[in-house]
Image 1 (cartoon, rainbow, N blue to C red):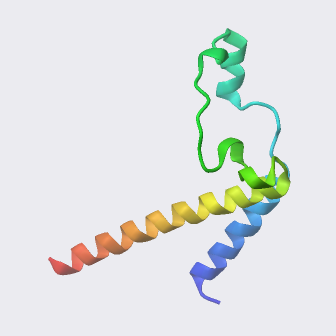
Image 2 (tube, rainbow, N blue to C red; image 1 turned 180 degrees about the horizontal axis):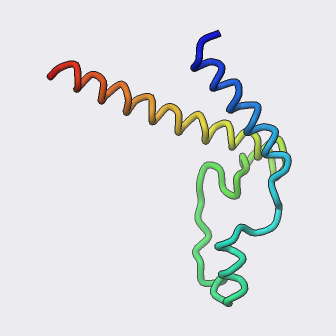
Length: 93
């Protein structure tokens, strides 16, 4: 098994396992905004994975795990494209 596949497998297992331990309490920034009284001034955004969940699955551990996997996949894809682009540019010079 090559290094990339091992890394993807390890990352996937880590994300899935960690997602079931994710806290349902607000994060630090949200907690401070609530404590200082300006949380209500924030604008509720919309997004593909709002509140670390996939909308059609609801807010549960499986939904959090899938959104984590999608996020990691997106980041890995972006970095792979950047690396390929920079490698191509370097070999052209």
